[in-house]
Length: 212
Image (tube, rainbow, N blue to C red; front, side, top):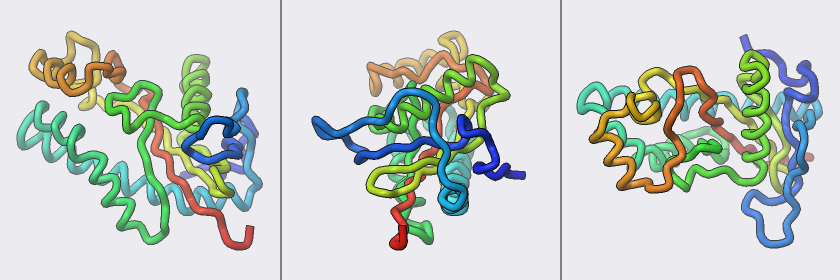
């Protein structure tokens, strides 16, 4: 059962951001410190629209990845993540009933296209700090303001056991897989994980309501 975010303490409910997602020189960036709470009605709207979009992306990616890994093995699954994950994300986004922007992001990315913007980075660093203090304190989802009056919804992602074949410690990753990773992503940050560890978030951006 999902907890209503506006009932959680402010430190667990969201982030206020005031500038565009891609910073130009001189644009303001989010403030440091814990995220601020959204008004209850806006948090509810972000949750109502963002959660199903995050569900669709996670289920779509996991289903395809599991199928590829089962049929063709780990190297093929790595190829899928490298070549098809972003197009599949765009496809799922286009199939949503509402015009939403959906993205996976993390502080330890493999593909630089998944690197966080300043507001996503603030959320990710906040979650990482909570994880270090007490993993049970990390919320499953957060809401917050986005650029240009939009809202953002964040779904926390954790490392599943099957992910360790490509994201685990060196001795857990097959040599052929390591070679492919190093060839495609020489600046890869997405290794050394343990099962259940915080991986990143799905971020859903909801356009501003016309009556806001």
